[in-house]
Image 1 (cartoon, rainbow, N blue to C red):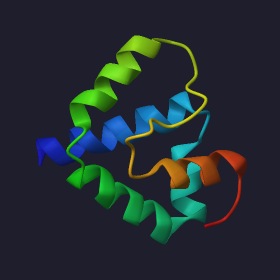
Image 2 (tube, rainbow, N blue to C red; image 1 turned 90 degrees about the vertical axis):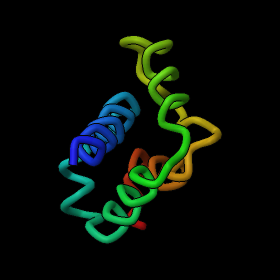
Image 3 (tube, helix red, strand yellow; image 1 turned 135 degrees about the horizontal axis):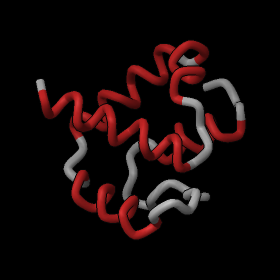
Image 4 (cartoon, rainbow, N blue to C red; image 1 turned 180 degrees about the horizontal axis):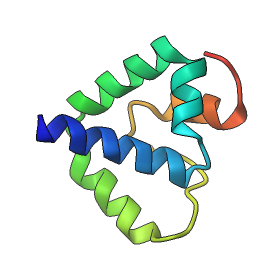
Amino acid sequence: MAEVARRSELMNRVMARMGIDAAAVACAEDMACYEARIKCLACIMERQCLQRLERAQAEELVEPPEFCANAGFFRRCREGVRT
């Protein structure tokens, strides 16, 4: 259960750094958001994702990492396009 919470928080951090309101996305894009969370839970790139967040520090991430399975979802959310 701790891993689920940790990975969910990591996804929220990535979204926040991209300027995406995770709560708004969850309401507006419920199924797409659910599917994205499942991808994050199964992702094998957690360490790289954390390292990228740490390197960027307080700077906003403009683009999701190339290795991210949710890159398209994050871009759509940021642009306000419904999935």
